[in-house]
Length: 275
Image 1: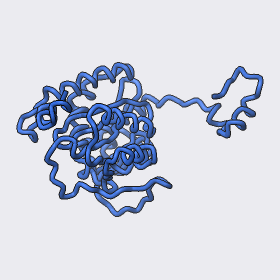
Image 2: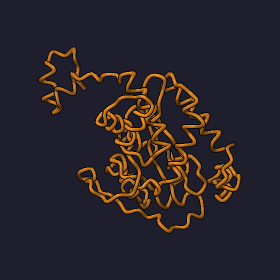
Image 3: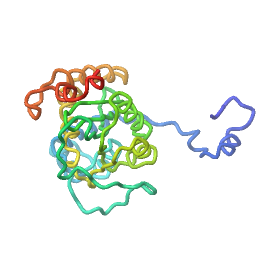
Image 4: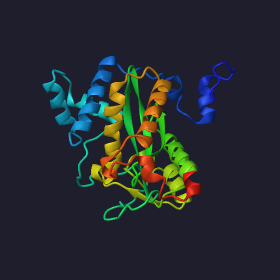
């Protein structure tokens, strides 16, 4: 929108567009290599000890010889989009103007594909930097229905992944997420409501409410991400694409009596839907 070669000064252009002048002049700084190394380690520690907050993670890093302050750990956790996962009283307010929906899955029997879908975002380390991965998962079959990569955690990234899943597989009865601002915003909840899908959200910090996605992250990271050093986003997209093909079509799951997600997802569906 801003034309730096235009005769109209940039200050006048930003006034006409009603945007901050600082946002035009700001140039994002790359994350220092030392911070990237710490973030990669924090990612592994968070998978191993999901209940650990910034104080405990700082202690775990210190035991490994990494000297870092607690505030620095909190900053990196916020950048990665992770927090200690445990049930606690709701002492924080949701994003202003965003409605938080109740958790609908407690006591529900999940008996068929497309009954319940879930979605989450996770941090993906690369050789030089990091990206975010969003996935839509079918609870009954554990099948990955849609996924996308992004360099930011903006709502449009999540809405696009949701729309991909609906376009390919129809729609579920219930859709479950956490209370992240990407999922409580009007763009995301409006897409669900517009398709007649019941909206369910985890209790604050209650990782067990979305346990199947948490298990997926462990599989993706230990079986794929930690074995690679992606050089670029396109490299990550290609490699993760091969992994999800393997995960859906060839990887047996003990919770599915040795079946693959594809085997659990497609046979119960009508032939037209499976095709």
